[in-house]
Length: 391
Ligand SMILES: Cc1ncc(COP(=O)(O)O)c(C=O)c1O
Image (tube, rainbow, N blue to C red; front, side, top):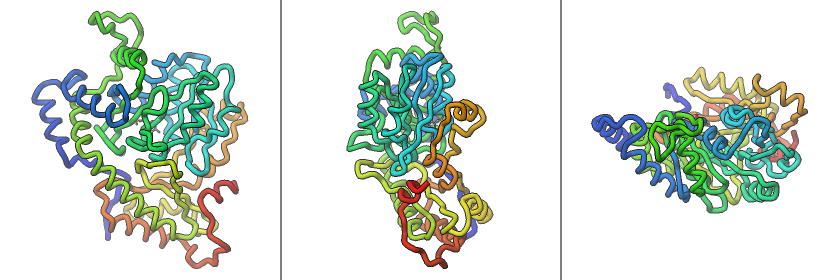
């Protein structure tokens, strides 16, 4: 097999082109049009929420949500560092400070047992991220938030239709955000959404999203808002994606399961075990490379795979080590050992519905061949969690 395998290819094989063309033909290509209402209604229903508002991206959805909840300069928000930079940037856009808390070695999501120590009298909220489609342990997070009078915004950008104890992600906090970037489970190229159940919050978010315009007086702006609206063309594409959501999810689940089965047999490669209460929405398959057993490190493996046409991505570079945040994190003596270990050894692998089982097997075989671990006499197999805990 000699082929280029990218990290992601959007699956636009349903009515995407038809609906987008309909939007163009109707001339409703900006942020008013029938597909927007249809998408928002269907998406809210499928997240078991009363309301969903389409936005121009997951990042703008996050900024909108925290702004709508009243975040202001001087405030603090508790976030994981092992996530995409938007989670922290949305807090920073408001002049507030993201406070980084370590992740749980079992779920790779924010560790609820570490949150309380990070709460101060400036803390206003918590943004748990459902990383790589695995829900964060929400009950203790919501309980802590209730005890301390904080809001919770779920960052479900990577976890569309994931479930926590049977309940849909997106319906578990005060608000939730989603991303429809080209590599996500549902996509419109660029796009996002905020979901919530509170009519007052929904009305405020709606006004803020539309530049702050008075809903009862056109072109009168009593507050400063943003232009974070979704276009009718993006919503048209998403309506088509929604029609095939079960099919898309089922295929992604098969792919990630096959990866996990194969990778778990390679010495020195660990995969995350799903929590018993988690119904994962498989975004990107991922693994941890233990170089001492595998025989080479994550970066060497990625380079080797690249040479064979297989694209990969390191697991998120943690935000507390990025230039805009590292000085403040150092001053706060931020120590996130599990985050650091996952970030240094984790690798994300190509995952998209059109990837064939043969391609997944090919990728896993190439990974196996890069390791020398199969020649080693292993003392005993340890799980991903044991290895992370040993950090
Ligand atoms: C966890 C997380 N939050 C937020 C975002 C931001 O979404 P977008 O790229 O649509 O702005 C992403 C996107 O990759 C993400 O993975």
